Length: 103
Image (cartoon, rainbow, N blue to C red):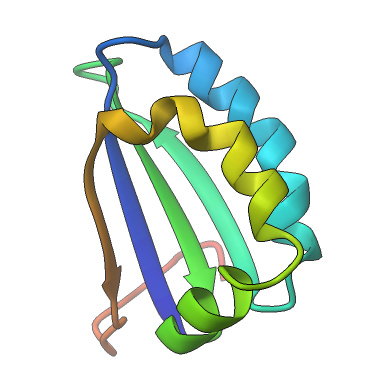
């Protein structure tokens, strides 16, 4: 598994507009077998900072599977207006240093 973080610094759109776009775009992530889950979080201290966390089966599955598959074009169409506001978009490998009381 790989985790993709997409960090937005919104200047041209509101966080609500981004949230609405991802509410719709999420259907295409859920339909993609390469995607294991996602979460959109908004910064409490600065509402213009929003981070999307996507779990992929692998970076290759994301880049070569999802991005060349049928779910990517409609996904991209919904989030395209926000691309210029991406401050970071990278893949991370989780380490074994983790804990979650909810599990």
